[in-house]
Image (tube, rainbow, N blue to C red):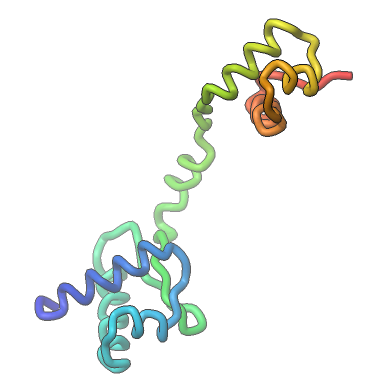
Length: 136
C-alpha cells in the first residue's frame, strides 16, 4: 500500500469532497489511472475500511462508489441529528424582531415600510424559531 499511498488518499479525498456517489468512470478520469489499477485500489480500500475499526466505509452501488458511515454508529448519529439546534439571529432578524416587539401587533407591510426592504424571509425565520407568531 505504501507505493499507492497517494492514490489511496486521492480516491478518499475525491469521495469525501463529492459527498455523494461517484461513478467508476468519473473516478478513473479524475485520477487518470488504468481501469484494472483502479479496480484493485477500490477493492483494497473497501477491505481496509471493513477490516479497520473506523466509523466510515466505502460502498459500491451500481458502479458508483461512496463513503458512508458504518451502521454500528447509528445511535450516535441519531443523537446528533436530534440534538436541539442553536438558532443564530442575524442583524436582519434582530431588527425585524425589534420592530415586532416595539410595534406589536404589526403587519408584514408595516415592517417592510419601516425597514424599507422586503421582510418575508426574516418573518418566516422568526416564525420558524417560534419567536413570533402570525395572528389574525
